Image (cartoon, rainbow, N blue to C red):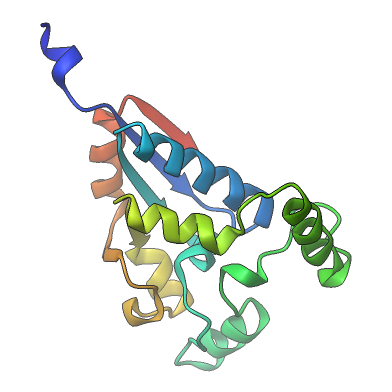
Length: 162
């Protein structure tokens, strides 16, 4: 058997958006790839950090605390990229998805952890946004820089930016 056929396939994904619909896409793809036996690396940066954050306050400086308040919350506070309607869109889409037996976003994230998806926070974004490692859910690996992610992406069979 040629070497390429025995090597574990892999997916490397940057998650920059914290929008509900984009996070759904990211976690559906990640869990699908992991279920197929692929090694999955998700690199969360800037607004995407919400997806791996607990519902805790963050920030040490005035600006950090303000950012934590304005964009606070966890994955359950993610609004759709369109039709947010001040939070009504999140509720509406939640109802519609529930009616079609679609898993909740938090359930997809938990499934990703269970399936062994490698989730990393971007150290630079965490520093800028004043989000410490202990603000993340269990299962998130130690933060890394872009160089680490680029090494993973360079060798991956599939690279995505969401």
